[in-house]
Length: 115
Image (tube, rainbow, N blue to C red):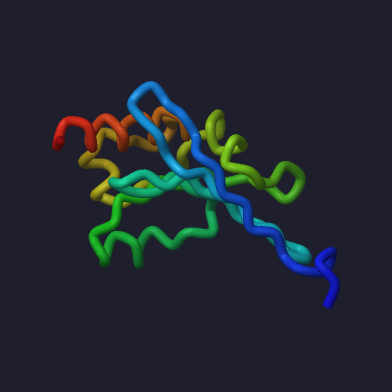
């Protein structure tokens, strides 16, 4: 298998007003997903299952792309609208309809309050 055939996994530090998070994007043949990871939780694309995450007590907020306009990079999440949250994410002030950036900032702000 050549390197061109391997899936891609990208990771980068992302700066926000309330701190730093890790942005990730994974690409493979006919698929992709992306996320922004904070100490408190994840803002990600629609591949994440909220029910399972909630069962494990995780703060997850998801945005959803479309086949025509998929969410591929973590930057794609920043202006995307949040379409679902776990109760743990809601407790941090994240609501359906906010942007991915607002959700990340809320997670980072919650982390700063606890320090």
